[in-house]
Length: 83
Image (tube, rainbow, N blue to C red; front, side, top):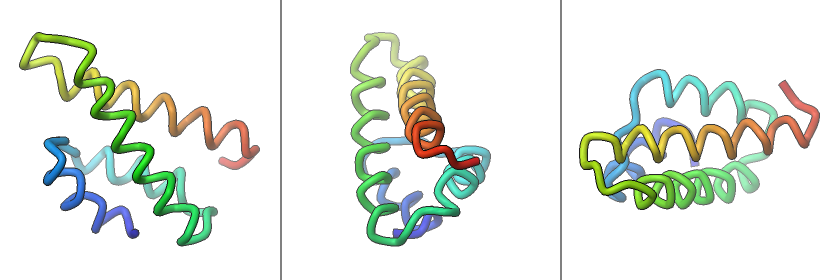
């Protein structure tokens, strides 16, 4: 799954990705194979939704999801020793 395709997938799940989110994802996944990328993007979406569930404040849900999923992705990239 390409990051651009992921945007539509994410919107269907209730996530609100910004262009900066897409750029961040592209930067992190540039070195990862297509097969692995799909798994990571699916898990990224799961982490986002878990983050959204952490608050009852409607206007904060997207930011909670964004922070959780981006932190998770940063940790995965760091553990792989990639940029």
